[in-house]
Length: 219
Image 1 (cartoon, one colour):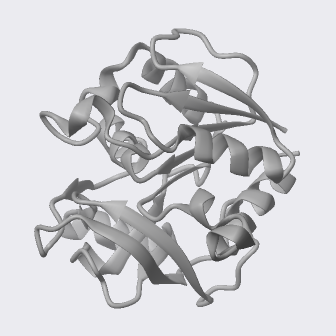
Image 2: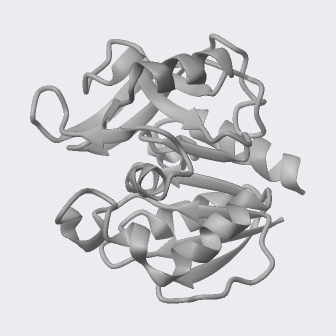
Image 3: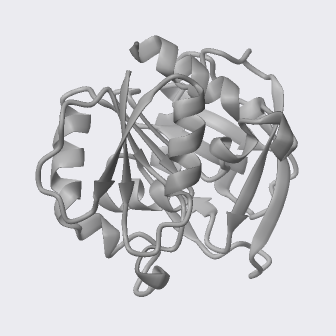
């Protein structure tokens, strides 16, 4: 299974994502944001970080990087795309997932493990969990408060595209949403970091389930 991890100026979880994916059996290719062509890939990962210092709007500048036109094209052709934290913000900026992120309800940076509920098991990303299963993953963001219109929220609910919900809602997200699927179900944007919970030495392996399940599905 071939995975590409894209690095933007300000990415800081690209290596974490690459290491976790490789540990789960993926062949990982690092990709610089200025590239306009991509090799053959089964999975594209937009990692966490603070692209371009989060100036203007989180992910807004990175969404206009040369590589993103090809990422969008591949996603629309069915290639799996995983956006984590800042990567989720970028996915929202390019329209591969609905909604947007605003400042956390408490206006503070949050960096800790949080409890989540798996909202659907009907995707290649979440099939390794049971619907309703409780898991724990780290978060690290200031602008992770997910918002969407009532029509968008209803569509996400009706189409079973909410992947994860927060337990306790630490950042104030609409309907406690922590991760959403794109319309084709081959794109997942999520604020929590599965790559930071992929090794028992890091304190947990709930995130490894997502990565391992995805790699096996795409292999």
